[in-house]
Length: 599
DNA sequence: CTAGGGTTAG
Image (cartoon, rainbow, N blue to C red; front, top):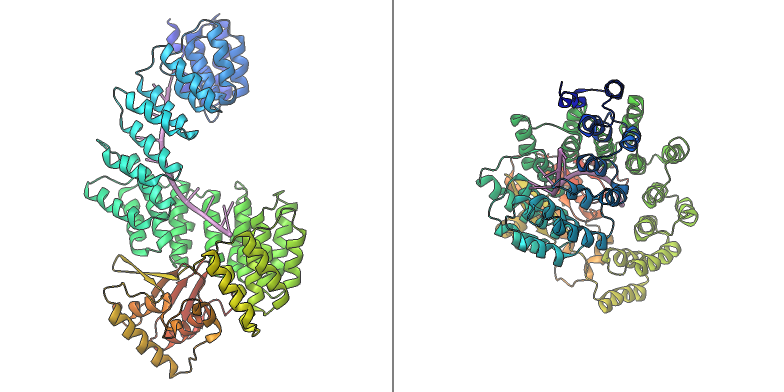
C-alpha cells in the first residue's frame, strides 16, 4: 500500500473523521510521514470545518516537516507566518513557488515586504508570476507605487492578474485616472479587470464613466458575473437608474448567476433606493441566502420610506431567525427608521436594547441617530443632552442634525451656537452657512445674514448646486438648479411655467422662506421656480403619459417650496411623484406626501 | 495547496 492513498481527508466532512484517519496513521506507524499527514493538516488548517488548534498540535509532533507543510501553516496562521518561515529556513528547507504568495499576504510592514522581495530572488523565484504578482499587491498595499511598477516592468510575462492588481492598487489610493490609463493599455482583459475599473469609478462617484465603461464591456460581449452585477447595481442605486437596475437583476435571473448574500443585498438596496419598496420586500422574502447585510438593507429601506413600524417588525423577525446577529449597522438603520417616523419612545428603547441586550458599543452614528430622533420631534433640549453626554466629541454631522432642526423649530440661540461650531468643524461645507443664514433671516437679523454671506465669500465657499436626476427611457437626465444645458431646456422651462400656473389656481403660494439661500447667487428671476427638482418633474411630465409615476433623485434635501409644489402637482396632473433626497423618500400622491410633512 | 474584483450606515 502506498502512503498516497492516505492523503484523503479533503473528502472528510468533519474533524471527527479526520481524527479517526489520524489515529489510523499513528497505529500504522505513519505518524511522522510528511506525505501521509499533509491531507490531514490541510483539512484542519484550511477547511471551514477544520480546527486550527489541532493543526498546530499536529504540526509540532512532526520531526521533519517539509516545505509543503510549512506552506500550509503559513496560510492557516498569517500572523505567525514570518516566525514559522524563519524556523523553516533554520531547518535548511528551500521555499518553493507556493511559499511566497501566502507569506507576502501576511506582511505587516513595508520593510518586511522588501526583505521578502530579496528572498524571492535569492531562492531563484524572480521569474515566478505568482510570487511577483503578490509582491506587486503588497507594495501597493503599502502605497509604494515605485516598487510595484518596478516589479511589474521587470516581469518577463505579466498576465491579466498583474495588470488588474496594478489597476485596483492605483484606484485604491484614489489615483483613478492613472488606473484608467493602465486599464486601457491592457493587452487582454477579463471580467475581473472590467469590474475593478468600473468599481473604481463607482466608488469615486464617477457614474457616467462607470456606465460608459460598462457599455463598452457589453459591446465586447464580456458576460456579467456576480461581482459585476453587484458593482453595477450599486451604480444604479446611486443614480437611481431603476430601468438599468432592473435589467441587471433580470440578467442575473436569466443567466442563473448565483445569488450570494452580497449580490442579494445589492438587489434589495437597488429596489429600495429606487423607490420600489414593495418589489424589494417581495424579493427579499423570496431569497434563500439572506446575510445580515440583506436584512440591514431592507430595514434601511423601510427607514428611508418612513415606515418605522415595518422596520421594527422586520427587526423582530430577524431576531427570531436566531442564526443572525444584528450588527451596528442594523441599529443605525433601525434608529433612523424611528427618527424618520417620529417614533421617539421606540428609538429610545432600541438604543438601550442595542447596548444592554446586544452589547454593541454605540458609535458616533448611533448618537447621530438619537440627536436626529429628538431634534426632528422638536425635543431640542433632549437632543442637546445627547450631544453633551456622548463619550466622543460630536462631529459636524451630529451637530448638523440638530442645527437643521433649530431652523425648522425656529430656535435662534441654540442654532446660532451650533451653526458657528459646525462651520468651524467643517468650513468647506456650504450647507451649514446656508442654514445659519436662514436662521438669522427668519428672525430678521439682516446684518448677521450679510456677515455669514461675507464669510462664505472670504473663504471661497460656494453653495453646492442642487442637482436632480430623472431616468427616462434608460437615459439618466441631470438637472442643475437654474441650468439650461439640457437639449430640451426651452420646452422644459415652458413646462415649469405651465406647471406653476396651474397649481397656483388650486392654492399654491410660493414659499419665499427658503429664498434667502438662493440670493447668495444673484439672479433676476425668482430662482425658486427653477430648482432642480422642478426642472426634473417638468421634464418627466413632458416625457411620460398622463398618470405615470415620476421618480426623481436629488443631491440635497428637497426644499420646503418644492415639497409644497410637488404635492400640488401630484394632484393637478394626477400622477405620483417619488422624490428621493439625501435623507429619505417623499411619495407625493393626490396632493399629499408620505412624510406627512414630518422631515 | 498559490495571485486580481462586489453589498449595507454616515
